[in-house]
Structure formats: structure tokens, C-alpha cells
Image 1: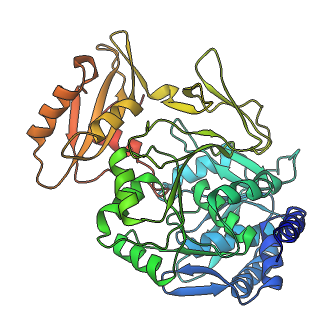
Image 2: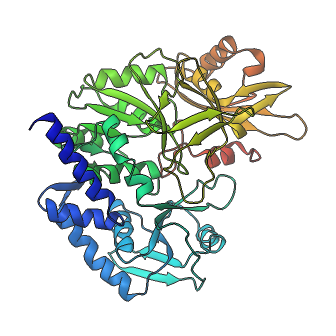
Image 3: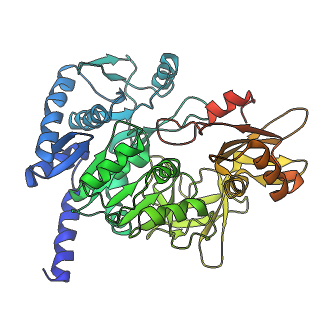
Length: 465
């Protein structure tokens, strides 16, 4: 097909998909268009678009009969239950909000009441489903919102934030071109759909009519087997999981064309390893936020690049840094009610090339005896030391001693704690040396694949910053 005609046809399809009401409509559209196309692989289970839609329809009928309405929490432990609930509730006009895994009952109750939600949709073991209405009145929505997402809840009860269909789907043509997501895409991701990075990635593939592969298991040999068996050509994992996969893979895989990642920075050592095991890949590091969308991206070709360089803005997105040092974003693709320009209180600056140099969250900076220290910079310095496999730095607030730092370190096999401690003191300025260094067999992760900072704080016994 002539390139101009192909682009015109794709534009027409984009307009059709952007004219839909929600993501259940999008799945229905794809199921009618290509019912036999493989949509989803979960370990040994394979579902075509037609089969996936047939899983959603009876659940939607059940939700309708149970009176599901309004803003509804979804409690589901496995990926398929999360996904089908997410789509079925949209099909009946409700706005699903996927719960993070591992929350206590009182935490779930607080999310329900403090956000004024209309109930909880629970997927029980064995396949049964129940709806527990809250009795709370439905809140008005000024925008045509179709789903909600939860904030991390690091400073209190997670907040429900809402999205229209267009706030993600309207940007898919832009992000998919950069990430090389298309109809022939076979994308691997892993983890909970309550992580908006996973949800957005899955929906971006649904938008194109490609295939998503995932696993219920956090076992890298299983991930590798799925990559090879299904000829995965696009990979989305957060850096903590990429590091696990990079350590586990012994034989390179040349079938990967794109790897995109965010939420944490990529160290030079990790970049080198990824380029070794995926020799044909283009590696993209993005900067984004649940409240916004994708903001900037960098193509990571040189392993010795500045790890805190998050690249230039995506097309159509404005980025500026205020006099307060905070990053402000001007974008139409944001959660409903966000005041634009918007900041998530991340710090940084724009270099002469217009690239964003990331400084970390304002709350993660340490004021140690009048010297301001970036935990991001400290983590990168620690990860670069010989013998250090992984590192996380947390600020610790002390009413008597002032701000200080705690470092959590994973030693490489054959490296001793004493050698690493000596290396830290040799490589860092005295004021930068963490007052406490804790060695762990591995860094704990939450269900979104991010560092479980509350768990580290509990382990250290520190007051919350």
C-alpha cells in the first residue's frame, strides 16, 4: 500500500476509535473487526479479541443486575479479573477504580468513604463476584469520566482521580508512534493493572489491535520463555523488574524492537546489560505521572549518558520549570479537574538542548546541615559503585539531628558489606555518606513493581518523611 494511503487509512481508524465512549466500546469494536486475532496471553492461557469480549459480556450483565453504578472500587487479585471487571463496569456506565493489592480492610474502607464512592466490586476465588454498595450518594462529574485511578497514598489515604476516554485514547497515536506500538505489536508487561503504566500500555495495544503477553508469576525464567515463545517485540517493565530480568537472562534475544520504561532512572550498568541481552532494541526512558500522562522521553543509546536526563517533551506537551524549581506541565491529557499547568512537585531544570534534567520529588531532597542533597543523585552514585547490585536512598527526618539519609543496599554476589562501606566513603563527600546503611538480599517491591518505600521505612524504623 502506498505510504500516503496507509497513513490516511490509519488516520481514519484513529478517528473511529477516538469517537467511542469508553474502553469496553473499544474492545467490542476490535472484537467485531478481528475476532480471531490474539488479544491476550496470560502464561498458558490465550484469548482472542472475540473470546475476551465474550468474557466481558456476561460480567457486564451480572453487574447490571446487581445495580452497579457510579464510582466503584474493583478488588481483584489476578490480572484477568482486573481487566474484565475494568471493562465490564464501563460497559454498564460505571467508573471502575482498580485497587492496589495488599491493602488492609480498614485502608479499603477509608478509600471508599473519603472519596465518596458508591461501592466495591469484589472478584472472589473460584470466579464468584459480589457488589457491596456503600450507600453514599453519587458525586457529580463535570467531565465524561469513564474510569478512576488511585494515587500512591504515600502521604495518606489514596485519592481517586478520574479520566475521560479521550484523556488517554486521544494521545495513543502520538505515544504509539514513538514506542513503535502497532497492529503487529506483541507487548510484554507484568504486574497489577492498578499501576497506571500497565493499564495505559495495555489499552494502547488494544487501541492498535495488537497482542499483550503477561504472567501471574514474578519469575524471570517464565518471562523469558514467554518472550521467546510469543516473539515479543515490545517490552514494558519498570527498571526494578528490568534489572531482575537482565540478571536472569543468559542468552541474548534479538526479537525486541522497543523497550520503554519509566518511574525510576536507568543506571549505566543497567543500560549496558539491556543492550547486551536485547541487541536490536531501542531503549526509551519516559517521564510521566498518573495525574498527567507521558511528559518527556529520551532515547538511551549511550550507556554513559546522564542518567537523570529525561529527554524532550512529547509532541504537543509543554514543560517548564518555575522559580520554585518545580516542573510544570501543560497538557490536555490529564485527570479531570487538574489545574494546568500542573506540577506533581518534582524538581529539575531544562538544559540548553531543552531536555529535562530530573532532580526528584521535592519531599525526597535532604537538607543535611544546610547542604541540599538529592536522593536520586545519591542512588545513582551508589549503584555505580563496584559490588553494589541495587540501592535506594530515603530521607529520614529527625527533630533533634535534622535531616539525614538511610541507604538500602543489595550487594553483588562475592562482594562484602565492609568493601562496599569503604567504597561508599571513598566515592562520596563526607556530607553525602548515608548515616545508616542497611544491606538486604533484595529491594522490596509493591504490586506496581515500584520500590516499596513504606516497607523500607518500617524496616529501618524511621519516622515518615
